[in-house]
Image (cartoon, rainbow, N blue to C red; front, side, top):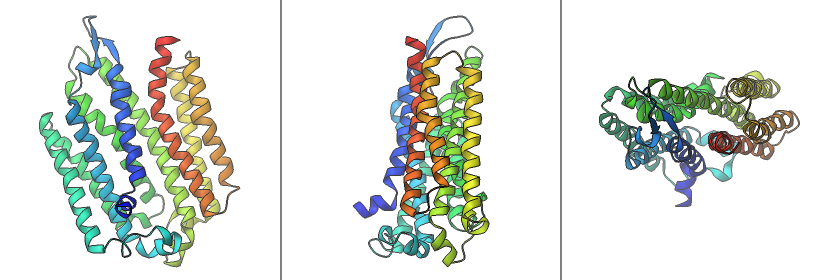
Length: 318
């Protein structure tokens, strides 16, 4: 079982599940607004999916991602034997044939649930979002990952889509003239957070190319680190973190300039760790140090999503 969980990257799946659950049960369900007639409304009553259906949405996301991790592991066996030999599962604990079968089952389950949910909300075209995610992950593993930057962007896009999907499936179908302004504001907020997650995931992917540079170079695999050099890869990663900080600063000035509690949280638990990562990135040289930075950025992804709760709480008690 532990080898199977390692294959599907259970810790990463838990991270994405946590983010999606927090967005609904920690944020959306506690939002209140007034409709066009001035009547108070609770957003818990204006979401497209029931609790069970939302869990299915989360499950579909996890199935698609699990499939992506499996197919990536299949194509990465040779390089992983150099970069991280102790973590290789395929060929040692799980056969390649079994891995392919698991990939097929997980991907079909994810896409299938996507089709079901799109029918539930009477938006059959929305199912294409899951098809796009599954296709991007396969194409990434089967070649695009060797196109520097583009491959990293694809993985970051899929991470951002895990939040955008919530807008499409749980918010957009319930918009009408009476709640249009507020609901579109929510979509705008979640889009901003999708961009945050995109930028953080992009930085994570770049650091991974730095950590895996030795194995990738041995097999002639083109990545940001092998194509542009480790120093330039670090510059690209730092640029992504700086862009995140700049965009976040703009977001705070526009929306939370007078909320000192929220501002303090963003500075202490999001911005400061990113500054430290950007600084340490140029000091570190060992694989385990890069792994540490990746883990810090994953924690920042969590604190970024948790900021939605902090904003709600601070608005109530400030």
